[in-house]
Image (cartoon, rainbow, N blue to C red; front, side, top):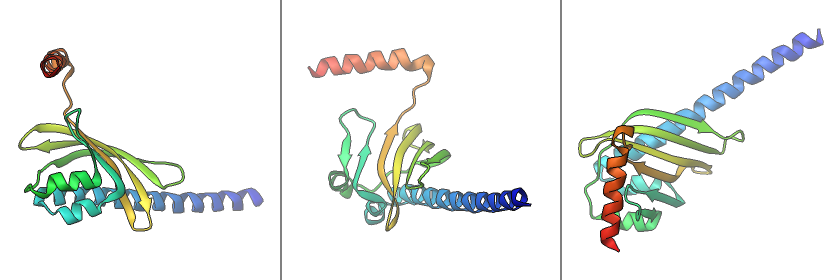
Length: 157
């Protein structure tokens, strides 16, 4: 009888955990979707509110590592940029306080790109601690692109 009760309690606990994880994933997806909408609308107050105080945006150029306040200054004079999430994967740490993600994005300006990053759970909800935008290069084009980058960097020296 004890084994059956433990099994039932275990199943009930598993269900609660699954619901909690589902709720957290929903909240994380909402933050990321809101981040993209705010960027598209040039709504910089909302955009930067979705980042943690120590948040960092890493752009596509090797020199682009923007702490939140520096990135706010950069973005402030711009109308925005539009990236549409096409596919996203989110993982949570066992304690449920940190998440990491990767997403494929589509942009009218650049085509396919990838966003990756980390979110942290705060008293104010989930916040983006790091967002990294990249342009995935098809393997067939990698040598050509990396050779072009090396040649470009050699000109800067």
